[in-house]
Amino acid sequence: MLILNINTAWLLNAKLLIPIIILQFKGILFNRNYTFTAKEDAGYDFLNLLCRIIIAAVSVVPKKLPKSELYVIALFSIILGLCTDIVLSLKYHFYGYFTPGIQLESSLVVLILFPSSGVLFMNFYPFKKSLFNQSFYIICWSIFCLLFDYASIASGYFHHNNRNY
Image (cartoon, rainbow, N blue to C red; front, side):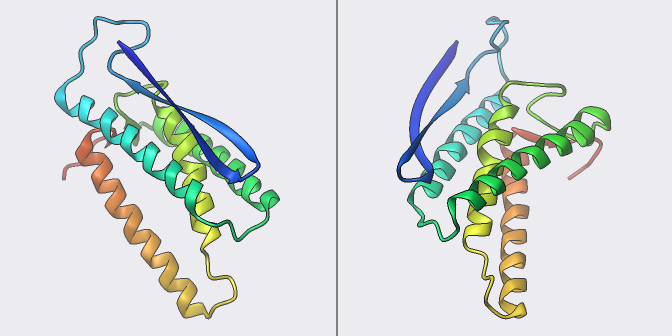
């Protein structure tokens, strides 16, 4: 069964309302008889919750950069995410989302999480601060990304192939 939750969020500009559709799949779109394991089900719930949190975060934070730069950051994040996923996931099978291959659910990661996290990262980047502050900011984000990667693997929505933990 496909459950569709529609949320609207103010992503980049208070005057531009961008409707974001968050899909929570409890079954595959064309094969309704498919049942998920408990880990896959937890992965979908984790991704749904994560999309809601990051949309709320991007909606609430004050934007310090011009609109044009925010759009460029979002588009760059989407293109970089797609290129990386195509090469590393589909061609070399290093990692994947949910199950191997292409899924509609993995587009949520590319279209919501990548641009939103890119906007959050660049919005608070300390451009005019010392090199120490900039390095500390990057190290903090790197630690956050490692913890996020661990949570994604533990929830079951992200997996590395041929790795033992």
